[in-house]
Image 1 (cartoon, rainbow, N blue to C red):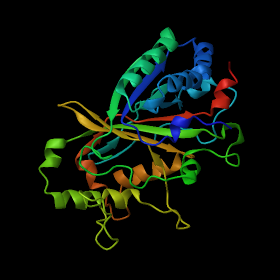
Image 2: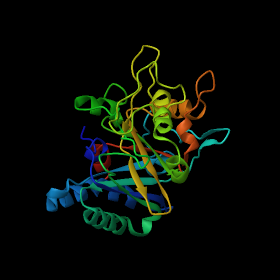
Image 3: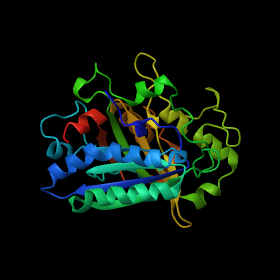
Length: 305
């Protein structure tokens, strides 16, 4: 089963995120546009080969049955909205999510313009965000992002549904997005050592704290989880910073063979452990959006041509 290569692509310099809501009565047209999507991307990738262009399209959990009523991914569900005290993960659903990225912002813009033109009146563009690589792969907080990402063949195993899980949707992936807004002024006022304690890594050289030194409230502790068998709970992060001079943050993207790892990590961050130790990083960044999608395989999409 051919998967959308943008799901597991390696890091690029620039990204463009497009979130759409569909208009009623255009389901047939949208299915056909999605069936042609990867061919469009492949053509642009060939025309601008030095840009290392890749992309994927994902369908919202709440829109899936309207678009594809005859089959549904086994674990597809709404975004796990949750909150505790001043920590919140809101649910702001979209019908379609298109992730475009390359090493050229002009190519991203060109592709995005053609995608919007392709869908035309069938959809309404709700939000668009431009992401960028910051320094050597760091978040705007100054710390390296995605250090725990899987590599090589293991990347596919973490990100993609396999035949044994769900044969109809093998090669697809469960996608969750959150647009975080950082409180940069407050964060930058913290001494570096305090920041490192909150993250659980050193800032300059990206060395993870030893088990003895790692705080229970650190981001690394709250997201570096294991299951009942002692295996690491993993997701593939495809996140990138975004921002202007006034608003800055991280556009978080989780790509996984199941929605459960993301939900477990998010709950650990917001609700904390049995002693109530939550992710202290959430005191300096806030999720303003949250949505769940499924990105089907190319073969699934193309059957509706």
